[in-house]
Length: 106
Image (cartoon, rainbow, N blue to C red; front, top):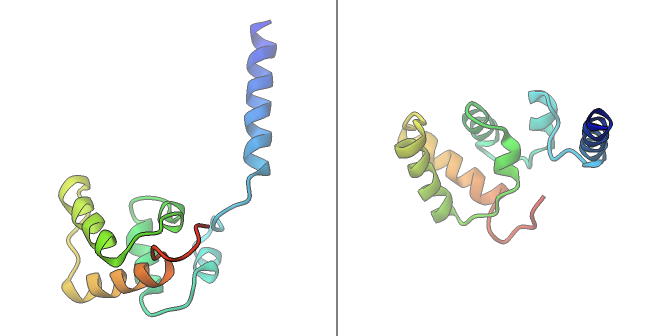
């Protein structure tokens, strides 16, 4: 009985995962192609994707100021390497453009 319940649960989870549309493709080339074109696109993708899935970024809708605070938090609390000022500005501009607070969530 326990085996059949566990099997049903695993099967159900697998079907649920297959039914969910992907936010971004799994490989870098396809994921980059799916992102809005704007200066800083590649720098932002590779900086963020170094530590976590870019799907986490793509689902957010934050102001530029809030993205800035979040970068500070990631450096101070999560061990993210500090960005050079020009790289940080480029990434913040891209995040505000592509994932700003006034845009619909993906």
